[in-house]
Image (cartoon, rainbow, N blue to C red; front, side, top):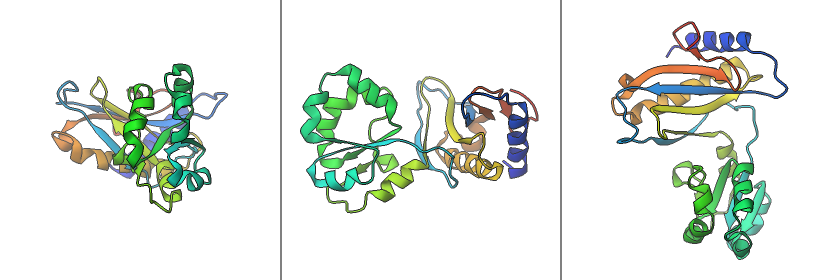
Length: 221
């Protein structure tokens, strides 16, 4: 994709947008072809090159090894010693799953984390994942780089349809930054597709409540 075409589409999306009482996100939607989600699946974590304009809330689930360090870095910390308070409390677990965008886990307690939190975090795609760098060793001295990287990490995954979606900025983000993030996601996705670029049916940009616009199509989807 040419950057000028992406910028043209970003401008069209913004011009068509109605004023909302909240800040909308800029969403990238990539529709796939020659792709059967029942036979194939994609789960890719991409670090965006530009800030997407929104601070993510990240929770760490750790043992005593990392507790002090984690509390100085993450938005919330759950200790292994407190797992009993969460066991079987679905209301509490579901609220936690909604409140936080990413979960970071201490590697050597992952079996216990899976037992207590897996049934809620798993179906929501929020279990700590090594692909995103969210599973860390108990002797890791620096947790801040993990937190900072996740702030600009997006998950690109297929579920039950041949499409992937992710946020690439906010409605007040710089157009150039949004375009760079779109390019990064697109280029990172191509190598994992069965037929690479031939697997792309269309690339769409939209605001949360806005109309979708195809890149290179010059109009609404």
